[in-house]
Structure formats: C-alpha cells, structure tokens
Amino acid sequence: MTSRSGPAPELGRAGGDGGDGGEARVWTDRRGREHRERARGFTAAEGDVPASRLRGPVERDWEAAGTADERRLVLDDALAGPSPKIAPDPDDPARVLMTWTVRAPRATSVLLEANGLVAFGGADALEMTRLPGTEVWTCTWSVPEDWSASYGFAIWKDESVPPWRAMSGRSARLAAMLAAEPDPRASRTIGSSFGVPRSVASAPSAPAPPWEGLARPRRCGRVHEFAVPLPAPSDPSVLTALPAPTALAASSTEADSRSGDPARSRRAADATGAPSAPPATGAAGAADAPGAAGSGGGCENSEGSESSENSERVWVYEPAHAPAAGPVLILFDGQIWLEQMGIVSVLDALIDSGLLPPVHVAMIDSRDQGEYRAEHVGVPGGHVDLVIDRILPLLRSRFAVSPHGADTIVSGQSYGGIASLWALALADGEIGHAIAQSPSLWRFDVAEALAACPHWLTARILSGTFEGPMLMHARDLARALSGRDVRVTPVSGGHDWAWWSVRLLIELADLLHARPNSRSDVGRES
Image (cartoon, rainbow, N blue to C red; front, side, top):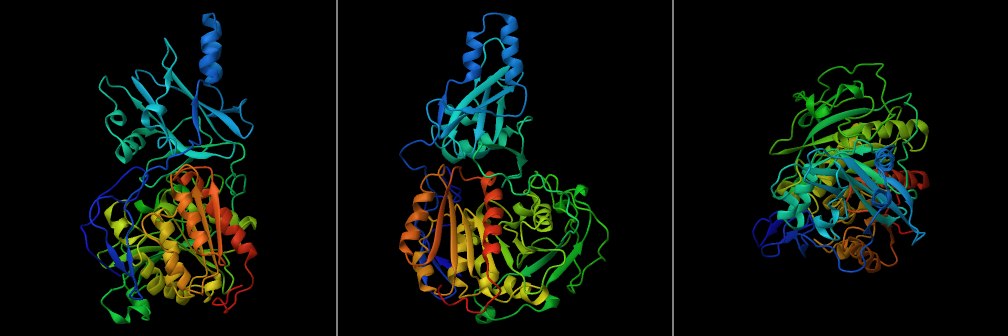
C-alpha cells in the first residue's frame, strides 16, 4: 500500500476521524488499483433533528411547588433511582422523554455530554438548567424509543467561560467529552476510544446487551498476544509469505479478571514464539458485569510485547474447548475491545451460555485515535494488508480455525468499519463476511472494489441515525452493490460505543448461528 499527493492530514471536523485540509490523496491497494480520498472529515447532515430539548417534568414540578416541603420532595424524587428517568412522550408514542438530574455543588455550568446530541444544536443546547436556589441541574430530551447513547456530565466550577462555549465542531465535542464525568446513578458504564469512562442511557426499545443476566462461565477461554511483523509494501513476497513461527513473539497467561487491566501487566515475550510462562489453572472468570470500563477480560489477562516500528500487537482470544475448523472474527481497534469493552468476559459468558458458538477472535492494536490510526486503519492497505498477509496465516497455522472464507468475519467501527469493507474486497475469498459499524464511507468509495471481488458472501452495515451522513453513504453503497448480499441497518444512536458494543455481539451471534457447515465454495454467489 502506498499513498501520494498531498500533505499528511490533520485531525478534523465534528464527528470525523480525520482532517479536512490539504490536497486529496491517492492510495494504491495491493492489486495496484488507485483510490482517491473524497474527504478527511464530515459534518452533520442538514434536515430533521432526531431529538429535541423540552421543558421537562422536574422543571415543571419545581415551578409548581408552592412550599419548601413540596420542593424538597421534587428534589428527592428527581435524584432517586436510576438515571436518566424515562417517561412516555405525550406528543409522540414513538418517542420517550429522558430526564437527567444531577447535584453539582459550586458549579457555574453543567453540560450533558451525550453522544449524537451535540451535533444537533451544539453545546449550548446541552447545557443543563439549574433549579433556582439549589445546586441541582436538570434537562429533558425527547428521543426515539429505541435510542441509546453514551454520556457524562461536564461540570464547570470556574467563573470563566467553559471550554465547550469557546470552541466549535470537533474541538468542542472533545473538550466536553474529556471533561465529562460518569453519572453515578447510571445503570451501565462502558469505556471509550479515549479511555474515559462513559455512562449509557438506553430507551425501552433499544436492544439490551446480550450478556446481561448471564451466570459466570463454567469454562473460560485464553488470550494470546503476538507481535506480528508488518507487511513491507516494497517486498513482492509479502502477498504469499507465511510468517515463520519463530518470528512471532507470543505469550499467554491466565488470571482472574479482577486483577486489573491487561495493559498494566505486559512484559517482554519470548522471541521463540513459545509461551513465556506456563498458564495458571483453575481461574474463574467474572461475567456478571462484562463490558465495564477498564475491564480486561473474563478469565485471564494477556501479557506480551509492545508494538514496535516493524510490528503490531495482536491479541487472539481462544475459546475453551474450541471445535476444529471453527469460525474466526477479526476486529480492528482491538485494544479498545480488549481494554475498554471487556470483550473477553463477554465472549466467555456468551459462549458458555450457548448464545454464541465458540469463536476465535483476533484483535489488532491500532495504537491511538490520531494520525497513526488515520494512516493505517480505514485505508486500502495498512492493517487490511496485515490481516490478509499476516494475521489470517497466523490464525490458520496456530489455532483450530477454519481455513475457509465462509467461516471468517471481519469487523470494525468508523475507520475500522470501512477497513472491514476494504478487507472484504481485497482478500479475494479469504474473508467471507464483514460487520461494518458506522463505516467512514465519506473518506473512500469502496463500491467498485467490492463489486470487482466476486468471492465475498455478506456485508452487514450498521449506521446511526444521529451521525450525520453516515447512514446515507451506507445506503448509497448498498444500491451500488444491488444483487449482492448487503444489509444496511439503521440504528438509533450516534458514533458511539454504546451501541457498537451491543450490536456487534448481536450481529455476530445471528451470523454464526445462521452459518452453514464450513465450506470451500466461498467464491460462489448464493
């Protein structure tokens, strides 16, 4: 993969992964075809706003209260129980009212930093209302009955102007998000791309996390960590060369998930590729709260080497008692899935309960959310070539996974979402399925590349109704690929791990349960 023409991009506009300045770049894929970037960022689409701010029940009840005792009851009720409080929207049966209330002593401004809402009205619309004479702040939004979003409270205690008022676009969004604190009354908390814990608000019809209520798993998988050499674009053998086992650093250990974040326990791996320490036995996984922020996984933490200039960290989840020739899932931005989303404990619980068939999962470290990721994820090369040339041969030589594309799935979010589509198009049958969540289709047109490859089977694209033109681009792609198995699912949410983390597991379970027995005829259209 190579690129030419134009400077390196800068971090960009609201909602985007990249920047929007400079000359359009042209990227050359592994087959020698050129792909021109269309943009390096996007803005919210004009049109109907899918949510609206209202004068809510707490504000109305406070104004109606005539005595101090009545007002105290209003506060007690508003601050009791889970947050946000949800009630039917009297003006629209397809919507609900969500009311957030928080006590913030000495605050001069409190902002509800809710994913997707800031794009429709800016930070001003998200500043909460202070109940006169109190330190309590509240706001109410009318949202679709199946909406979900991550959020936090940004509490400003200085007399100066809050940073989200002095900025606009992506800068304001990041300033508010990084200043936001989780809601102590939220029912669910997750991690984020930036390592900041986030609360989750879910309307009644939003899909529940499939792992909720599951018992601790009786059998737990293991995580192996590898330092996988990066393909060299100038090396003509890169397309066929199988990395020698001795060239791959690997280690695996088992420990209780309660021991902490795997990122904090990494050590140098044995250069021979053998486990650097014998695995412990008898560890029990904690599956009662998978997906919590900072959770490193169910039954074990991973240890191993850091990424280097010429290699990338890849973690491989190996399910307990994996069947021969089982399916495999490859995830971009794997460090977020492992370290922020607690995916190992989720997989343990779902597989042990039978909700998910045993599946190996390879997670690729994208290192950061800045320039390195922009240059290696979401482009027709980079980590896509890494998947095809290095990771798939590694998985098929070291683990009990199927050698067929029909049993191989790739998935990602945002840049990772479009990367999964590039992988589908360029793998030439080695990958049969993609689950692309909020793919950054504004950056590249992948229709021609996908149409030119007859070997892939299905593309499942999920895009949020609160993330500007993303859904429109997904539908355009589906129309361009008319006749192929492309499914576009609109999701009531933003560019957000709140629904990505849930919907991926739902789509994966559906795809794997519908999957026929392993077959070698992936190149044939159904």
